[in-house]
Length: 333
Image 1 (cartoon, one colour):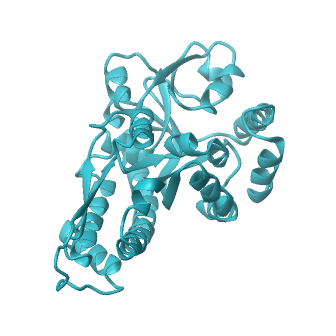
Image 2 (cartoon, rainbow, N blue to C red):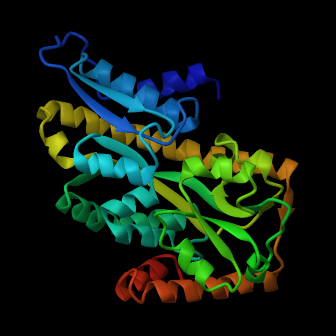
């Protein structure tokens, strides 16, 4: 879609509740947020339009300053700055949300959901308790978003069954607690802990052979040109969200909080719809350039069995057994 059209549509969406430019700026408030997303990415375009809408709707009384492209550090660093009061908000993946409330990461257990619709049902069912727990810790999750469908990708290697990971250097996000559990259950794999900004240099220096990522992320962060294989299967639907300091939001005038909430909800909805479509489109582009791995039924079963064992292991201390069972039930497992 033409960027000018995207700009106009999103402005209209977030400002549908009304716009009063006659309000005079008595006391301007600025909220500073950070993101790993580049300014020219899909996420960057939506956040830019959202920030403009907030400023317009409040007559300049509230502005949002965005630090792009991981300039405030990786997700762990950004969440640390949010907790320290150096940032007011962070747009983050499930790994950042887990630093607010670890059980949120249970939605990313492998092999639970077969579609975005299944994830939506589970997330909506658990959202109230997750948001309540986050507020008790001093945070507000103002919007939930999506990152894309995780697909296995490799450089010079086709991973068809878990044993194909043996002898390989597999990327594992530093703050993740699920990936390392899976790798522990596959003999001979070497996990390489990395943050998002470290992945591209690691691919260039051949420090890693395989990784799992949404197609859109691999494309926009320039990982895909250094990879040769991509799986047609997806076992995880990656999520994210917008996290604010509760204390900072409470310092805002009630009408400014209302504008932030309304516009943020509309921007999140617009972004969610676009991300899913763009991630599918990105996969199609990757599939035209890379070797696509299509698993046989017997190979799929090997992964299904492994994922079930991983979830059972996670229920032994990482997450409560009750939460694991609830998520599996919501996913139809």
